[in-house]
Image (cartoon, rainbow, N blue to C red; front, side, top):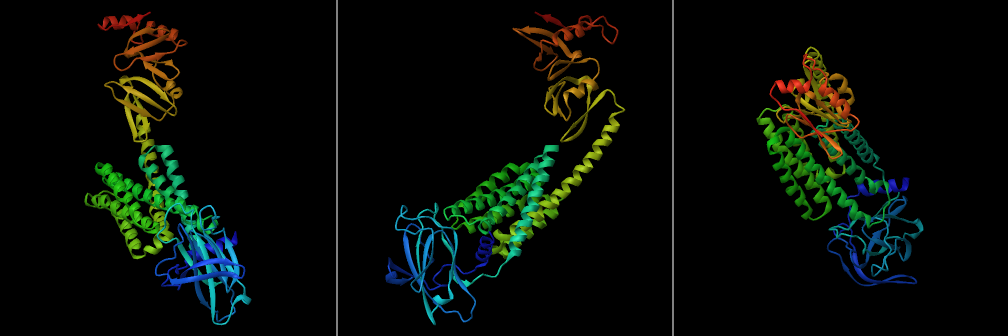
Length: 493
């Protein structure tokens, strides 16, 4: 594992790519002979080394080192490879071939150590046989690194460590917002949980090349995932900022983000796609933040300042954006929002407790607690209570309904005597009953308004008894009271 880690750290820090301007490669016709490769008709490569869809022989001349440090050929790219140094075979990565059937895919990263005795004074001949038939997608730069460097290459663990710390912080933020959403059912917390989770997953996928020596065909999937996660982050960021500071145009901003950020799929090169998906997403998110500043919405000014910092870093150091800056900036954006959300929920809980205290002196009203806050609902206007897991639905007079964070069993003891449990998931206000009718093998209770309520067979006798029982107001019964008030009430059998 440590060798894979060392190789990933090396290749993430290499700035030399397989281009003729950096390394004087030549493309040749070649065959593997018993004494080594036989090359002919060699010509300089003016552009990047590209073995995609073909078998490619290349060679270069490497000067002998002036010190005694060991050397190795480092390669990273979408290709299988076989290497010779001064006619001696250094090794093979997979098995290159002239067709897809002949080729065995190699690893995306490979290291070929060069023995000290293999060096000759002056010029040394390096020959590579490459092929790439299983890449899946065509890359603009299929070979990201080919070069001879000291072995082992100087490590850069700080980059990987910072990325992992940022990924851990983002995962913690995603969990925190997920808990908040489970408790409060707020849409903003769900978007922020997705925002932090997407950034954390992208950090993990970005580090796969460092931690996992995968076969080169998986590289297309990895790069596609990085771009899609970057695009998802940009769109979610626009959704959150627009929903907070410009809610009336939230749908329009999300649609615009889908079109603009999605259009980065047409750009050449996955690094370019990823960087521009992030930049465009942040730039679009800055628009509703700026509108919030003009309208003096609380929190808009620091949000706009942070997005501006994000854009400045992205445009000033684009080569660092996808590898490091994005994760640090994403963590720096999400973690303060998590802190603010926790503080806000604490304040809401205190205000909820105060409202509950005030409600204790209002016995004619039910304190309804939901994700939106606390509301005092007149008990006389409650038609029925319908259970729904940890929430109940209160059907009110006038067609209105309220969600209440309570269970049906608890409300049975809180509501006055004119409320009766008529079904395992229904409590009805008997003051609003119009009729009880039989529908086949089922019973239905019709109220003064709204859809009829189901009555379970086991609770139907208790309901009849309650309807005929003397009223708390002193009348002989609900049926007689309805008759005196000029209303209809009847059993239909």
